[in-house]
Length: 215
Image (cartoon, rainbow, N blue to C red; front, side, top):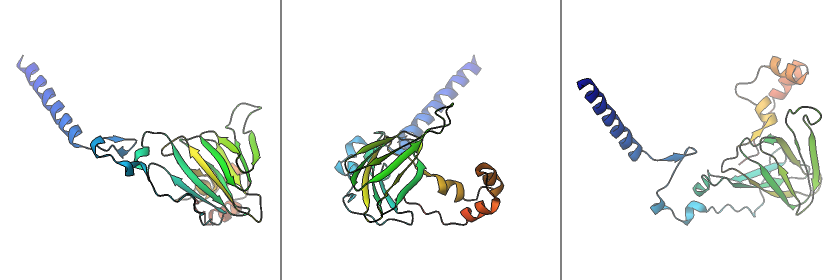
């Protein structure tokens, strides 16, 4: 009987300690601290992002200005973010994926050639490539997790698009950067076999500077 009483007392003490730790520690959802509702104000849902202003593009000819939960704390749990994408003449937002979001894109200025590739499904739909040329005002959807891209085919004029994504933190994996620019590098034996090319081709690709176009 004494043993049972001691066990019960220990359980109560552990519960109290756990409750105090939980009560004193900040509550986190999706890794971000939840703010006391009494302290919330309009600035938690606002950012002077200047998305109407053009951005300088990088060597692949694009610049992605993403507004997500990192910039607006009030986006946490709301499942949405937005990005402005600037394209230089003949610039592209290279093949990439968003592991946590579907993307819907609309062209504000110029023309874009866009497309995505389906997953490794059974034939005949295995790795099917779906593409479209978009003009000003057109809208296109990229399903979550699929490799997709946008390319400005005009050699003289830039293009601009706005994208909405179905996550407050969609993530982005640029395929070339991840495969050839990883740190440390993936073995050239592995990549040469995967891409069915000579190892010196892989070595040359890994020696390039793989620039990130996401801000």
